[in-house]
Image (cartoon, rainbow, N blue to C red; front, side, top):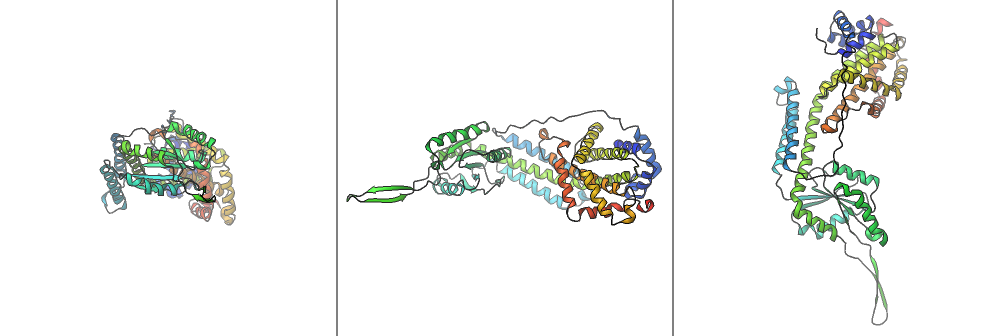
Amino acid sequence: MQLKRPILVGGLGLSASLWLLNIVGHSPVGHALGDSTSLLSVVAVGAGLWLFNKSRGSSVVVEPPLAIGPVDRSAIEGVIAKTESIFETLISELSEEVKADKTQSIWSQIEEKRKAINHLLANLERESLAFAVVGNKSVGKTTLVSELKDSWQASQPTVKKVLEVSGEEMPTAADADLVLFMTAGDLTQSELQRIHALIRAGYRLQVVLNKQDQMLPADRQSVLQQIQTRVEDLGIGVSAIVANPAPIKVRRHKENGDVEEFTEQPAPQLAKLTAKLDDLVEHETQQLVLATALRQAKALQVEVQQLLNTQRKQRALPIVEQMQWIAAGSAFASPLPSLDLLASTAINSQLILDLGKVYGQTFSLEQAKKAASTLAELLVKLGLVELSTQAFGSLLKAHVATYIAGGAIQGVSAAYLTRTVGLSLIEFFEEQSLLPEKERKFAFAEMGERLQTLFKATKQGMGLQAFLQQALSHLPIKAAA
């Protein structure tokens, strides 16, 4: 007899009694696992496998360099090759029914992404450029865009667009070969964080220091040097400008001795910036185009991975549901909290193994047990075990016969917490799949905020009440009452 879930059957073998076998036999899960005699055999053998695998593993995360280096076609082709590999995985994991039915929406989505890849490759030799101007409010973005369009863009027919990006938005992958990041003073921490985010996303940047005329003469060079120091390791240039100089008062003496006073609008001071832009257009157009193509290729890779994740989630959710009802039956039947805890750890360990397999991540039994223990500690430290028990205890008071069934609260709570862990793991694996392999970090200890967020979301509205009604149908309440 082949054991496909040694942690699960081993853990239940140590913690469960014949009550559990009876409960599982009455549930849809029981029918899936077989009759109670078969399950008892599995449990007996599985108990001896609990400490079977001692292999350990760890992941080393290497932080990628922040500055963008030269881009060549091979880098773009490498990303596209990885995307094609994801396509192959996606198609191979489709159900036979979907594979046979080309009218399913997934096929049109695949075709759309492949057309986008072909369009990207066809545009690698383009000579037209698009610039985007970003920055906080009131730094002069609108004025700079207008000035560049009026006085500079005409002399650079290669530059087809100069766009303003409002607020905290990111320019889209197709809208900016070069980002002009505007500031009106020394860079704040939030501005630096945004610059880092843009570079990590693959954008080429130039920092533009505006409103120098509003600074004291002694401060202008100091602020400029501070900005240059902050971004010099990022490969970013800095240009100081005055996009909209303040009007100056002019006093003119007439021949008759009268004094005439009026205001005069100085011309914008953009020479240093436009000279830098001219140089970039003349010497780095192809590099700007390739950097954009690489960014677009990576964006398409993420979109295709999300298609794969959507298909995988359809297979992952039934696993979570199966495990939550096994957890409910185990907690309902276990006479001692320590045995309930052992079963819960076994269930969550198996959940990690099964969901990891769905999302293409292999964990050893030892790694899964450690991760399950970490998640159990988080549930206790965050107070989610106590909160779920109290919440379902309050709801169950309306069900008199059910409430007096001693294990009902523990069973429903265990199922709910298992579901919370399962959904958190699905989100976690999906997020990891969107990262480059060298950046993936399966740090289960960092899932606390995710667990809390899911708990709060379900607790609002009718989430807990609906789950309670579903859970009660999987417990042999009548027999207990």
